[in-house]
Image 1 (cartoon, rainbow, N blue to C red):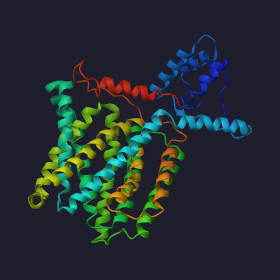
Image 2 (image 1 turned 120 degrees about the vertical axis):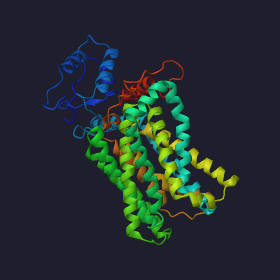
Image 3 (image 1 turned 90 degrees about the vertical axis):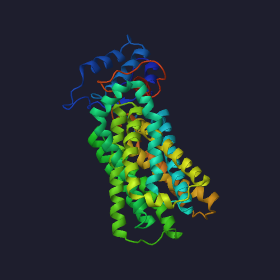
Image 4 (image 1 turned 60 degrees about the vertical axis):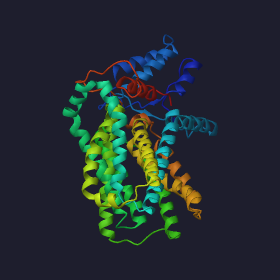
Length: 439
């Protein structure tokens, strides 16, 4: 039999069983011994003395405390006829396209679209003679600091915020430094190597992110996730082939130097994404983003003043330039706000896979702004990328990618009342609602 699940006593329980996550029989502990409390709960669920509400509560607790439970998708039955196969395949599709998965897909494409907007605006700024990429990002970090740090102070109080800087500030300083340098090196690489080389080498961030996500979260990767990565990279390869066939590349000034710089930038990106995922799974969003904005403002500001002060003086600071900077900053704020939410719903690796579709959105912008003549391969690359994103979570639910334990630091007295969105308690509640979603 392809399915090891035992039938329930009533039709109602059987239907309910189909709507909740399936649990592996041998994954309750390191020595294959089941948790006695789970055994008792399963035994009760098979009897008539437990109602559906209690069963849901049991499953919710099991998912929250996933030290003893590993979730998997409903199995596909191959050897019991076509009807059984189609029914089990339909259950798998329903499981994959859960509300959380659909939101993750949409969030991933939103951040991909935001990245495309920043590229388009950066091109427009360069055409106007504004050559200060580090200065562009200064406005981003400063805006993040102004938006999220005051609310952190409101929630923690001045003393609590001061303790946060004293005890945990070094972690956010390291995170912000890697983020700033990743952005700087990625932009710098385009000045030395080719466009196609940058597109390919930027993918180095994916294995780096997967490694550090495993290092911080210890997720159980399934072979279908590696297949999903491979399919997404095929989509990227189709885009690269399209650019090559349409002669969109440009000659390299120093390819070796540019490639090394891009690899370094991609390494910073992968580390930053995975580490930020670890932070937002343990701390409120407003704390993490606010601290990144604070330390990023200091680091990025010092770097811009030291490296680009001549460019800032020579750049044109008129109304159009300021408007483009506002548009760039707005898109980046959306990116830096939605990305941590995507880390919680899915993972940082999924984020890196999602943004590979940004070149397709760049083509759409080019059709209207620069009257590009699209090559047919571009329209193949996007659905291939989306298929890869779906395959990535074909076998394992999103809940398996890391634990969610959002809380404020224990040395901080969190202020109660007021706006609860983004607070430790609200973030935890939202996270739990997402985690216990039935697949």
